[in-house]
Image (tube, rainbow, N blue to C red; front, side):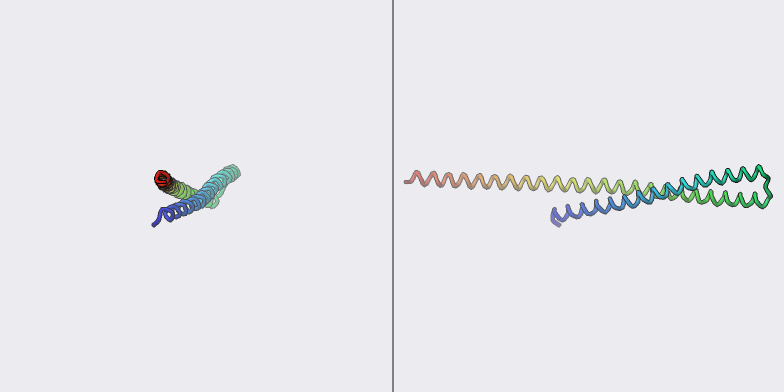
Length: 144
């Protein structure tokens, strides 16, 4: 595989990781918003529960509230796990992106060194050719 091909590949990998990171960030943001909504809903539900308690509540109503609170607690726990999952995904992709960026930059430095070496060699050859031409030209004038 040529250096150019390898550079192109590493650039593609980096671009793909950037897109993946954006998707993960979006999913994380949505999960965090879901957690916030659930927390807000919990506050509203608790206030309604307190209001109904002040007004007096039947046992059936109390059991319904208990069931709602349990379901809400389960949904909140699931939402927290989802946020934790997406945070971990974000961190993992971020680490891979940093590594891909470093790989690409290393390849760019290597390619630049190769270019510089090739330019130095080309200048050396040109100078050698110029020196040879001057020597030949000087030698041929001296022979006349």
